[in-house]
Every structure is written in structure tokens, then in C-alpha cells.
Length: 532
Image (cartoon, rainbow, N blue to C red; front, side):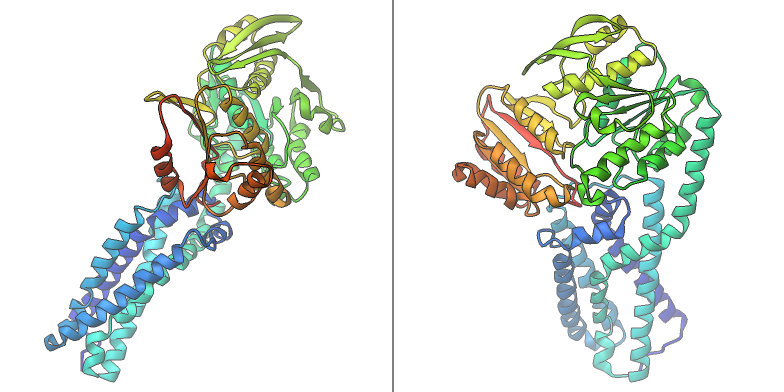
């Protein structure tokens, strides 16, 4: 019979618990990236986990089975070492956890971890949760050995630790729920500090919202205004209260003249919350479609949510021509954006006539597509309202470069790659397909479909398939949305020999490598985060 309470036994329990906590943290690291990309929302993360194509639970279950079987074999094989048999039986855990890490690295996940303070806090909490649970389980097993005193059980007492891989994901979600006890009040304080900082400054705020085109218009506007003013912007696609607060709190507002804030929304009240932090002097609405209908429920709610920005606008709102009438009821000072005319598009860029203040100039930019001209027009209208002249704006337009992952043209070994990975809306998809046709050679599209369209998701992905007819090669990625795309393609006369389905992006790239040749043009349409 083993000794239950002793210094060596206590050290053994602690060391075993720490080792398992470390191993669980390692094998769950990439899962934490998916949780992070889902906004630390357990519900959204769990929805991703349930998708058959992810096989996350299956991989952890296989790890548990392999650990249990080999641990039992090793424990029995070394039973002649008495107390040491159970300790030796832990060796297979290290081996199979290492093999799991190697195999998991081959699975294509695009949600790489961004190490932020919040992520660090989550991971520290996760380690502690794993360590505590592991310690409790190890202690209970040693107590059972002490009470039972059976030699065979003593050798096999650490086999039940194979249950821990099955609990890796639930423990991650538990740690996420626990850490929110700190995160929620911490975030409120952080956001309040940004709000007070903005209120005390003399910086001009320009806010941008819409169903699509927000980030592109923001980067274009930054490029224009930077020719005359000192400009602070929310980085990348940061358009949440925390994203705005990060930009403000990490900057000395005295060093800037203008703050451009991108404002996103998935629910009614989201834009109002953002405007409470930074009420805009000038606001832009880039366009409206059924994007995020999954969370809004109805198109009317989409319009109402985006319209919240108009209630808080101090000076004027600039609204895209094709959605201006949707906001007729709002009493604020509104401008319909009509400053773009005579758009000419090619694979070399876009040119058009820009009219501001009654004067016109022909301008050109390397950005691709008719929609880019209208994004530039919205930004130009805002820059004009902010105090720039037509000549200053026209000169700045020529210096606007490609925006990362938004129809960004990359030339590689004679192949034209259109990286439209951050485009996941209906209008943007059709614009991207139009741009693809500007190029000679064979046309190839790689896409997982369109998301967050609610009741329209099936219909719009069906229509996407219809619009893919005429493309020389189509590679659909995943299982989530591609069935509707494939059906739309097939039922409207598409050649199914030109269409393939790949399990993940890595498999799609492998298929592409076999097919692609010099002179081809490849469109990566909507390289979605793994949560979709």
C-alpha cells in the first residue's frame, strides 16, 4: 500500500499536475487563437467546435485513447518497480502530446494567436485551471491507491489522467468565463478613460460605418488627410469599443489633428455605444447590404443600427449614393456622395472625374475596381469637409496604395494574385469577380463562401455560385457554406469538372499549385477566420 500523505508523494502530485497543465496549454494554444478570433465569446467558439469539418473534439479524443492504452501497457510492464511503475507510465503522455502538437501543426488554421495582455491573462488563468484540475485528479487517484492498496491499481493509477485531453477545450472555456470577472470591469474603465481623453481634447473625429467598405475607406481617408493633417486611426479592422479605446489610450492626442474611427456593429445599439465614446464631427456611411443579418435579424435593423451614427453626428454626415434614401428620416445635416463620375477601370488601376466645391479634376489610383472609385469619393468628400482643397485631395489620391487583403494585387512568378481575404460581403464579392475579369489568362477563384447573412446565407451563396460561371477553375474551401455555392454553380450550367472542394486552405493551395501557370489570375475571395 502506498503512502498517501508524505513529502515525496506531495511533490509527485504537484510535479505531475504542473507537467499536465503545461502539456494541456501547449496542445490547446491554437484553439485559444480561434477563441480569440471569436471575440472571446464562448458561444461563438462552441458553435465553431460543433462543425464536423473541424474535428477538434475527435483529435483530442484520439489523444486520450492513445495515452490511456499506452500508459496502461507501460504501467503493467514496469509493475515490478512497485511505486515507480505509475510514474514511468506517464512517459507515453509526453510522447503522444508531442505527436499531437506535430500533427495539429499540419491542420490549416488561419486564426493565429495575437499575444495581447488579455490573451496573456486568459492563458495564465487557463494554466491555473488546468493545474488545479490536474492536481485534484492526481491526488484523488493517489488517495484511491492508498485506500484500495491493490498492486495492479497502483501501477495503473495514472491511466485515468487520459481524461484530461477530453477536458482541454471545456477547461479553456471555463478559464475564459472566469477571467471575464476581471475583464468586464477592466474594459469598462479602459473605455471610460478613452472617452474622457477624447472629450478633453480638440481633435476632430471622423467616424466611418457601413455594411462594407469601412476599412478600405478609412485607409484611403487616412492617406488623403495625412497630406495636410496629423492623423490618428484605429488600426487594421479594429471597430469595437476596445479597438477604439486602444487607439486613443495609446496615443498622445495633442500630437494629432484628426481621429478616424471605424465603427462596426452586429447588434442594435453597438454604433450608439461607440459614438458615446467618440461623438463624430463628420460621419460616413459607406453602404448597406444584408451583411451580419445573422445577428441583426432583419434588413430594417441593419439600417437602424447604422443610422445610429447620424444621431450623434455634430457637423455633417456623408452617405453613399446608393443607400442615401434609406436614411431620409434622420434630421441631421446629410450629404449624398455624388462626387465621382466617368469611372474607368483596368488591371492597372482606376481613374475617374472627382468633383468637389463645383470644380472637377481627373484623378487616378492603383486601387482596382469601380467600387474603389466610390470609396475614394466618400473619403474625398470627408477630406473636403475637413478642410482640404480639391487640388490637395487630387494630388493625394495618386499616392494611395493597395490596402492589405482588400483586392490587394500581388505579382509573383508571372501570376497575378488578388488577395481579397477580408472581403465577406455580397457586393464586395461581385466587385472582386468583376476585377478578376480585367486580367488576361485563366481565371481562378478560391473561396469558402459568404457568412453572417442569416436567412439570406443559402440564397446569396447560391447566387455566388451562379456568378462563378465562366471562371476557369474554382476551388471551394471547407464544408460550411460551399454546398450552396456548388449547387448555384451546377444548376445554372457550370462545368463541374472545373470545380473542386478542399477541406481547408492548405489543401486548396495544394490543388492550386498543381493547376496554376504563368499569366493566370487568382482571386482569394474571403479567406475567413476559422470561427466560420
